Length: 419
Image (cartoon, rainbow, N blue to C red):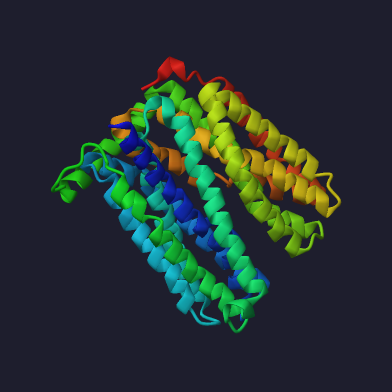
C-alpha cells in the first residue's frame, strides 16, 4: 500500500468515529434518557420509566454481548467485515431517524426503536474496530486507534453543542419549542452519521474479500470457528489476562461515564452544570486522545493505560469529597484527559496481541467484554450506598475495579505473546 493510499484509508476509517460518536453523545448520553422520561413516557411514573429505560439498555447490551463473537467469526470466514459494518450502520441510522416521528406518549415505540438502534450501533462497532488491522501497520496501531477516538470526540461534541443550542434557543432555528428541537436533533444525528460513514464505505478496502461471498457457508464456518476461537483465546495466556484486566478497568470507566450525571444530581448540582461538564469532557478528550496515542507509540501503551487508570482512581476519590460546581468541572477535565487514551490504547494494545487474519472474531470477544462491563460498578455502588447510606462512599467502591484491573494489566507481557 502506497503512503498516500495508506493515509487516505486511515483518515477514511477514523472518519467513522466522527460519524457515530454523534449517537453516543446526543442520543445515548444526552437527550434520549431525559426526553424518554419527560415526553414519550410522560404518562408513566418516574420509577416505571426508569425501569423500562434500564431494561432497554440491559437487553441491547446483553444481546450484542452474546452476538458479537458470533458476528466476528462469521465476518472473518467470509471477508465480510466492511459489508456487515455498513449493514448494521444502515439499520442504526434508520432507527435514529425514526425517533423523529415518534409522538408524545408512544413510549413503547420509542423504547423499541432505541433498543434496535443500540444493538445496531454496537454491532457496527465490532467490525469497525476489527477493520483497524486493514488500514494500519503494526507500529501504527496506537496512533491510528487514538486518531479514531480523538476525531470521534470532537465530531460528537460539535454536533452535540449545536443540538444543545437548538434546545436552548429553538426560535433561532425556526423551531416551535424545545421538544421539536430534540426531535430534530435525533434526525440530525442520523444524517450526520450517514454522511460521514461514506469515507469508510469508499476509502477502506478490506483484505481477503471474496467477490461473491457465500453467506450461508460463512455463517456455518463462523459458528464452528467460535468455539475454536474461545479455546484459542484461553490458550493465549497473555490475551486472556488482558481481557480480564480490560473487563475490570473498563467497567470502572463505563460506570463513571454512566453514573456521573446521576451522582451529580444526587449531590444537588444543577442539570446545566452536568451538561456543560459533558461538553467539556468531549472537547478535552480530542487533543488528549491524540497526545496519548502518540505517547503510547513512542513509549509503551500498557504504561500509558496504567497512568490513565490511576487518574480514574483519583477522580473517584476526589468525587467523594467535592462540594462545588468548579469541582465537577475540574473532574470533567480530568476524565477528558484520559478517557480517549484509555479506550484507544486498549484497542490498539489488543490488536497487537491477536492474529490479524482473525481480527473480527477476536474483537468480537473484546467487544463482548466491553458490553458486559458497567455491571460490577453499579452493583458495587448500589451495595455500598445501601450499607452506608452515603452516595459519596459509593463512588469509592469503583476504585476496587481500577486497582484489580491495573494489577492484572501490569502482569500482561505484550511482547511475550504477540500474534
